[in-house]
Length: 265
Image (cartoon, rainbow, N blue to C red; front, side):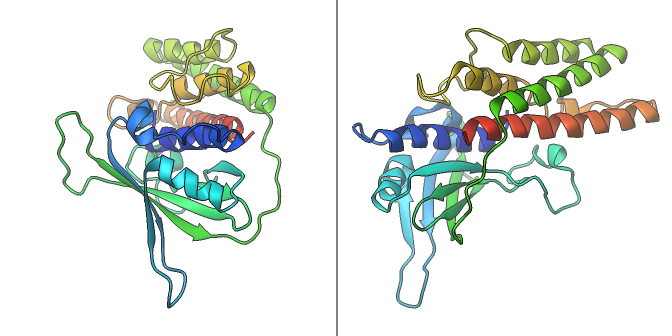
């Protein structure tokens, strides 16, 4: 799974759960959540807005969420644009740090887009906590309310894309990948789904069963990495290679649609 994307989903889900009930302290995700296991620091930055204003920095999700609640933010949403400028397709660019623009939107009296950037700056750490994550805000005009794709629609699209990818894998004797896709298909109907890699990505009891199933399936379906990933497969048959690219684009769109549908319900 892409670590940048997983961390944003965790902030949205845990953040919305806390905004709905602030009776407990705001969560310190960078300290306690597995999506931040390799993160050394998390800083939220509000650039100066005028000649006499100053840049404001908030360290970690607890401080940031507390400030957002004070300023009237009611809801967070995952921001993942469908179109990406650049020479690489999104499913390939996602294998690189900051390869695809992502962030979150804080909905309130003054909506803001918080863009995400991950850098190492030469950081070394014995447990691999090398990433310094910066979330920078950009003021937005008032946003019209939009209805995200329903969980049922996103699930149907993801399962259809997974079945297509599995069939292709079987045809081309990519048996390990066929099993991988079968596991993702099964997760979409699992009566007790668990999100692979990051089982704590959502607060206990926050998501309904169909949302948890779709989230688990989406995580299992993420095959878009570097060496050794689905992206790295080479096929000699040119027509089959072209078909694989089309199937992969469809799968990537379906996975992103699933994750956005869960995060933004």
